[in-house]
Image 1 (tube, helix red, strand yellow):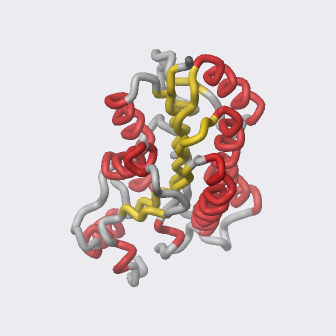
Image 2 (cartoon, rainbow, N blue to C red):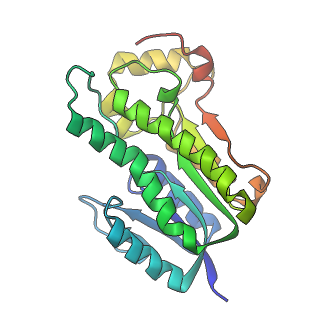
Length: 238
């Protein structure tokens, strides 16, 4: 009988990195798939791969599935840029949709034949879907697509007892968030968040871990917003 494993897609930095570290405490076999740019890969559980390279991804997942039963996958990979629609061209829009939506489809599609009944899938969206400071049209559109994909898959895969849920982070104190915002924006978001703090990557990772686990065995098709209540007060335009 094969041992179980969990796959994290996009665990090099930020939320994904925190999730990978958290899962390793609870599970023996956790794989981390990412580009690992400027990063020395030393563990056999860290696999350097372009998640947009569908053929190579298929090969790597097949290799993992030959040794392990894939019990859960978390697709955390994503990237965003601050660009107004007047400045954005078709290429950049397509690339952002590719790196935030298509990449989710690629990972789930590749792993699906190897998922057993009772498996769990968690995707990651963004509160930019509900409201944002603007200049993130491609990112917001792609992340809205992630929610739609999640809900549709939850219905389609329910007969196989495969759960599909989406975690929706708000402002998270990561290098990506710092790059996308100005100090004044970060200060305003913190002040307008009812809990008066930005989320740490671990805050999001804990929520993903819960949905991956059997503790959430009767939860599927849901979008769990983890933003300290910011979306309740999202009337500001920074």
